[in-house]
Image (cartoon, rainbow, N blue to C red; front, top):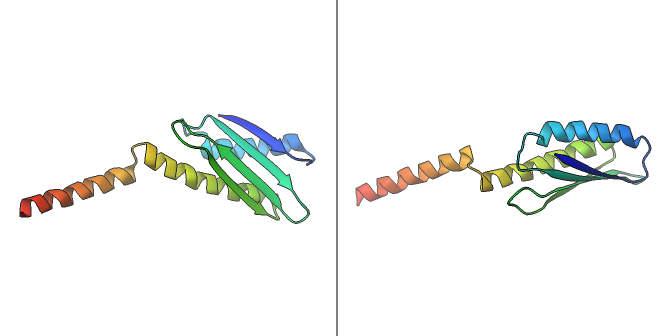
Length: 117
C-alpha cells in the first residue's frame, strides 16, 4: 500500500509520517483492494484536521475528514471513519458474510412461500 502525505507547516514531519504509516498499515494494510492512500494533515489555532482519500479497485473514491483539538484523536477519528467506508465498500463489492447470510435467509423465505402456494 502506497501512502502519500501532505503535512502542512508542521514540525517533526518524519516522526508524524512514521506514526501515520504504522496506524494506516495496521488498520488498512490487510485489504488487497486498497493500493494507495492520500492523507492530509493540517493544523489551525483551534484544531487539527486529518483528511484521508483512497480509491479501491473497482470502486469510487472514498474520502473522509475529521477535526479535533488533539492531533492523535483527529488521526484516530479519520481512520475510524475510513474503516467504516471501507467495510461498506467491501460488503458491496465482495462476498460478505452479512450479505451471504441475508441472501440465504431471503431464499428460505421465498422457498417457504412457494411451497405454501
